[in-house]
Image (tube, rainbow, N blue to C red; front, side):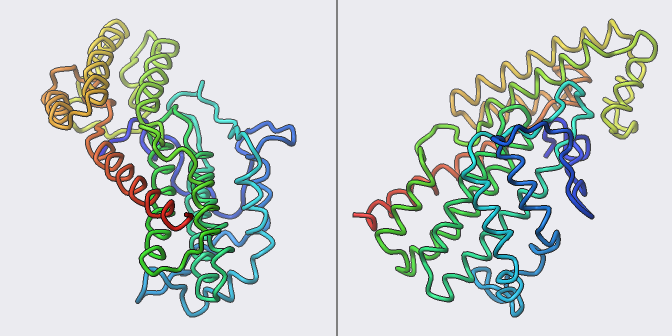
Length: 326
C-alpha cells in the first residue's frame, strides 16, 4: 500500500541505528519528546529484538526476562515519558518530502519493549506492573499520532493494537484485578473516539503538505525531474514517465486532480463506505485523477479496514474491562 510520503521519503527506515539524535527538535524541558530521547539514550538500542518466545507470542524468550530486568531504569524513564504531557518531535514539515521522522521506528521498538516487560511481569505474578506498561502503550500511541502524515497514524495504530491484543489475551485468562482494569481504562481514555488515530486528519494534512510544497518549490526548469528526485520514486512506471517531462504549468494543473481525488476519498471516509472508497481508488489507478495523483496519492483501503477493526476490538475490550472494574 502506498502511504502518501512513504516511509523511505520520511526517513523512517533505519533512522536510529547507533544512537539517538534529537532530529532538530527544540525542547524547553516540558516537551515529552525530550523525556523519550533521554530514555532512549540509556537503553540498549537492540533490546526489542528477540524478547518474545518463538513458541508463544505472549511469553518472553529464554533470555528476555534477564535482559529486561537489566533495563528497568531506562524502562522507568520510558514510562515517565508517556506521562510527560504534550510532545513536539520538531519535524520540519516545511521540508516537504524531505521531512525526517526518526522517532517512529524507535517508538515502535519501545512499544515492543513495554509489551515484553508486561509479559515478564505477568509471568512473575505482578499484574499491576504489567497493567502500567500496557496502559502506557495507549499514551505512546497518542504521542506518535500527529494528524499530518499517514505513516504516523499507522504507527500509532500499530502501537495501540499491540496493547489491545495483549490486554485481551490476559482478559481471556482472568488475570486482571479490578484495580488493574481501572488503570487500563484510564490509560485507554476516550476509547469511543470515532477516529482515535486521526487517520482522516492525516489524509488532509498529507495532501496539504505535498500540495503546498510543490507550489512553493517546483522550479521553472524540469520541475517533473525535480519532483522525482524529491520523492525518490522509480522513473519506470508510466505515471512517473509522464510526470518526469511536465512543465511547471502542467505540474501545477495536475494538482486539480490531486485535490479532486482527496475530496472524493474523504467523502467516502465520512460516509464510512468501503465500496465507495474502493471505487475511488480504482479510478485513481486508472489515471482518472491525473499522473501526479496516480504517483503520489495514497491508497487508504487497508488503512480504513484496519481502522474499523481496531475500533471494534478496542470497544469490545473496554466493555470487558468495565465488567472487571465493577
